[in-house]
Every structure is written in structure tokens, then in C-alpha cells.
Length: 510
Image 1 (tube, rainbow, N blue to C red):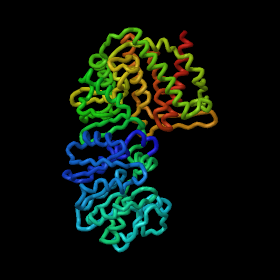
Image 2 (cartoon, rainbow, N blue to C red; image 1 turned 90 degrees about the vertical axis):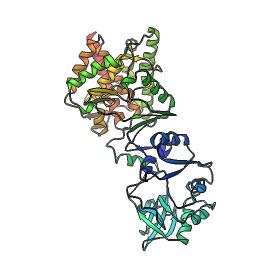
Image 3 (tube, one colour; image 1 turned 90 degrees about the horizontal axis):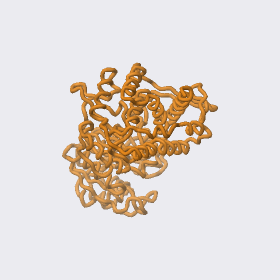
Image 4 (cartoon, helix red, strand yellow; image 1 turned 120 degrees about the vertical axis):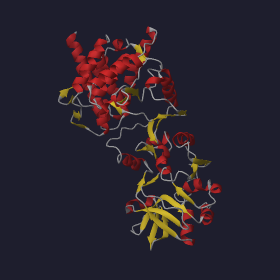
């Protein structure tokens, strides 16, 4: 599963805001009992299912060998044998299907789907003839169209025959396969094919392809995951410190965040919140109401030692920005970066970074802040005329209780310029050639009006509008290495051009 393999159990990868294993569980009746073999990252599986499906009957079986010699799906299933001494359904953790499941019957059936001959070597292949499965070829190249791939979904009626054969230590491609038991069923019993509309999410490329069936643009990150299950929102962070700090931060100002109902390991959850994000509204009155609400309900004054505030701002702005730019340079070496962006010559970052007034950015205004305050993270419930904040940043340079007010203003401005809901719809373009780059993205008609209102509010608070603009450029540069192409390149180009413009403006003023 590529970089996901180190971070998350495959069954927990999200697809259309639900974990793969949730898609599987919800295909079965509410009274179904599940036996789940767990091994790799098993705590994640237990924790997620405890939050997402607390009403389901689930028995966990720990698989002692899930990656060494003799491991494989056949061995994992055999570990569950004592609990399955009756007819049962079997589903692999990376199999999804659209069809309604047949009710339990007095025969065995195997889920099948056609695959190109060039891919048959990756699957267990079944020859179907006369409404029965007649032959099995596992991990072999097959050019006969009467063969279909076994999709990892089946109903085992004659379980005694199946278990006896599954106990064989014969390996295929170095693994104990389920095909050992299936082959015995084909030889001794009636086995019917069940044709399914199949989504295979068994490897990285297939999973990423499946993601784009539900989204125009892959906005995901490799170290955090989002789920929406039966009225409950679940977030998972690979770094459990992030989860702990998010929960702690929400407790400091509970009226502005959703109530946390679950917190275990890297997971936390809260009930689905009514309303729409501010991107769904087109109202200057709501924006003004938001700013007033933020002043009274969110941006609480926090007393912070000046030296501590400077340290936090220096770490968060200068040190973090330089580290993020190093990460971007590892993806795209700096010497290859375009020098002309949207027809405008732009100096390389090596020239721009020393011009940033880092000492000025260290003079922050300590407040309780959201930390990622853009319209996609702000809900407005029209029925109650109330706001809720989502996806708050867990800390500011390690500080949970406070951050820099300038940063919240900059995030607001950045999210008005660059509408992230439009980005998720793939309404952006990026191209580069011969040292030149061009990018474009969709904006709302109200953008200039919103920016004017925001700038007026910043000035009304006695803050420096130009400093907010400078931070917006830094925010885009910081975001770039965290995202996929072409959004990462567009963010970097946008950050560079805004940074160059802001530094030039400052020269002219001085």
C-alpha cells in the first residue's frame, strides 16, 4: 500500500469518508456476528471499530504470524477456525462489492469478476461452466475467458471439508492461501459462482484509483484520516500527540468546538454537526457576524511572557517554514523551479527568504486561536444563526493554550483567496515548461469584497494588514509539501509570487 503501509491498517483506509472495513460491515445485516483476524496494527482496528461500530458483535482473533514464512490469508483464516464451525461468509479486508449478498443457502458460492488476462497472475482464477465453478488456478497467467478472478468474498457451507483442506501447509507464492480450501470444495461439493460488481483496493494504485471514483481531487494526507460513520465524525492521526492535544484544546473552549465523545489512541470522534461550511454561503452579513463572534467567543486574551511569545512565533514561522521548504526541495529540487510565474519574473526563494522580516513576525499577539481558520473549517447553522469550528490546529509551536492572532487572520485571508472546496472539485490548473509556470484556480465573485471586509477588521483591531498578507504567502509555501501534484506545485508558485509582491511593496513603502 505504498507509504500508507507504515501508517495505517489497510482495512482502515478511507473511501468516500468511510473506512474500507465499514463498507464491508455495512453490507451485512445488523444482527450479523463478525470474527476478525487481526495482526498488523491491530490496535488501530480495535479502536476504530469500537468507535465506529460499537453496536456490532465482533470477536477478534489475534493472528500470530501475519508477515513471516507460512503466513498469508489462508493461515490468518485458519486462526479463526474454532469460532467458525458452521456455515459462514468470508471477506478479505480489501474487497468491496455493490451487489446485495445472497442469503445463507445449502450450497457454497464464490464471488467472481472478470479481469484482463494480463492481470490473472495476481489472482486466484476460477473456471465457470454451466452455473458451477469447475476449476481453480491460483497466481497463474490464464487466457481463457471462462476463468474469472475470485474477489475475496464467498459463502462456505461445507465448512468441514473446507477447514480440513485449509490446514494444508502447501504455499503458493510463499503464502498459505485460501485457495487450498476452495480447491477441495470444488472437487467434493457443488460450488456456484456469484458475479459481483467489484472494487479491488488491494494495492496502492488500485486504492488511489478507487478514491477518485468518489472525489474530483485527492486532498488526502498520509498521516491523518477522516471518517463519517452513522452520524459520527471520526479523525485519526498517526501521531497520537496530535490527537491528545486536539482533545485538550477543545476542552479549553468547549462552546466553539463539537463535543468530543470518543478518544482512544490516535482517534477522536464527535457527533455530526448541523449547518454548512462558510464556502456554501455568499453573505457579507454572515462574514461580519463571524468576525464579531470570533472576537467575543474564540479569540480570548491569554497572558504570555513576551520572550515565550517570541520563541513560539520564531519556531512556528521561521523554523517551520524553512523545514517545510526543505521538504518541498526534496520533492522538487530548487534549481529546477520556474523563474517566471504567470508571466511575471519571480526571484528564487534563496533570494526572497533572507528578505522576510522574521523579527517582525516574532512580535505576535497571544490569543486562544483556531489555528486553521479557513471557511471549510467553519460551520454556520442558519436555523440557529450559530457557528462551530472544525479541524482546529492542535498547537502553536507546541503551545496548546495560545497562538498568534495574526495567524488566524492570515488563515482566513488565505482561505478566501484560495477556495479549498473548489480545489477539492479539481477547479485548478498548473503547467510548467522551460523555466516558466502558469497556474489558475476558481474564485468566488465575493472574493474582493470579503478581503476588503477582513482587512478593515484587521485594521480595526489595531493590527498590521501587510503583516497578514506576508503570512498568507508563508502559509501557502508551508502547505505545498503536504499535498499532491498539481496542488503542491500551485501552492508553491502562488506562495512565491505573493511573497515577492509583498516584499517589493515593503521596499516601495520604506
